[in-house]
Length: 242
Image (cartoon, rainbow, N blue to C red; front, side):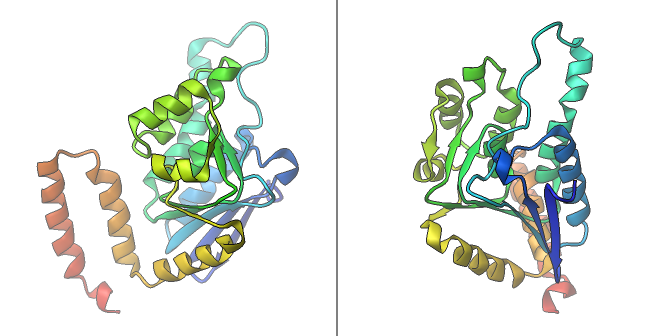
């Protein structure tokens, strides 16, 4: 799997790269399981994680979509089979440190889900996104679950029902992207973001990720109490003075 998923560590920053450009950087179930392990391991001791791919496309989806013609597996068996995807989604959401996604080209289906799940998503103006599942008679709830909390309900329903390909600026307006830059400026923009993230103490960078993940599930009153406690705890820590 090392030739399809690349792992690089420089100082305390881990970069994970999909290296399957001849196949549109599509991700097989075996690759998804390995990617889950990579993320879970990297988040334990990295300052942050960079997630990207090589070639023209970011990720055109899963290596296989849907089921082969014939008798379908029993429902419980099928549910377990797809856990490899949901486990990967959880690895993004549950990472203790932020994941910076770099989208240089097209991201469809599973690829759009992975782009959405990164905490910061910097896109080239050549990036395009879609959720094409319903056009292939595939129930789209896996990819939808990845985008929930990332984009608005109206944006999610539009992408799911129409299967339209949206450009980078539309993705930005939907909340799917954090920043869109000219393609020639993508690498420099990412390097600038890396520099900004690197200046933040790891204690603080983890606390921001923790609050952004947990706080959105809380009522306003509970989120305020959580923020108050976390703010006092982190800002009184000696680790911020180092």
